[in-house]
Length: 397
Image (cartoon, rainbow, N blue to C red; front, side):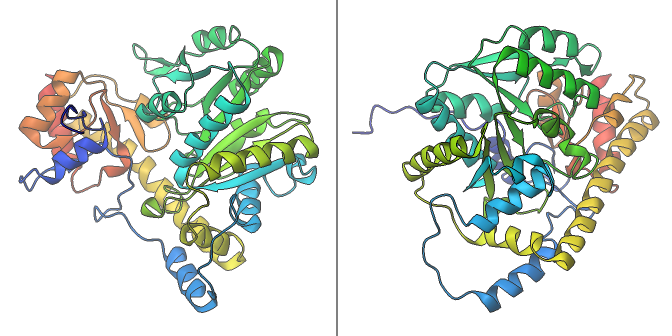
């Protein structure tokens, strides 16, 4: 029955990781996949996570199924991190959450929910956006459209074109917004621009869907939530897909959440009942371990404080690598102005290289980045920076 199948193309990002693993060159560097590395070029397990797991092992008494949307204490932790402990959205009881297998799982459940319950709604994504967004929503049966976002000529946010497009999005459609640390550009709206986008959303009547995968990796937990909270006014409706892969370094635990904010408590209860249907038809109920880590850390003042210190250290290292990258490029004789990289936030940035130069970086210098020229700044270290910048200087000539 499978003889007629053809070989599917490799994933544009994870496929590069496979090629990287098979590359025998000892000097190889992987700047493609969105994984944080420390100065030892390792993806660490946080000390707060290890301590939480020890507590969990001592306390655990059952391996029974979790509820379809996951434990309520987990959902409460997710919502408090997103909106803040005293936010009206929480006090009113009009926000509900489902634990999902990573942020990707949240996006798929959101896509299924929209397709079933908001018939005819298209979803709008930024141009560019994370490569998997379009595939996930298309697989859920949604029509995917694009709005302008990044100005490649000036390496900045094309806010005028973005707002002009979003003012034309029909009422009832869904607009995907990156909560912070835009993937792949690293360029975010500022607070005033977020306020403008929220005004446009309310005026036009489209539904905001936030992909919030990097909270704490930009400027801080509270600072990175400015955009989401600008939309979170009384009576608002929105959805948030959040992930703990990056800010807790829990990549292989696949732990995230889908939070829906309705206009009132009754609407939220109805929405949650339909989210449960989407989850039940997908993976039935979530895995326990990763969610328990999150609930344990966020529910313990000491562990939370330790986690926040570790998160700040990761954020500081990423921002330092941005500065070091720009300085080392200049030291290698690159005359192009790369200062825009220091103004961006999060793990990713466009490096201003063509597809041909990307291939040359891989073939001649064993440096792996995706075809768009997106680099994972969090994969750079002070030890490999000179090799990276020498290679860039070579291909940019």
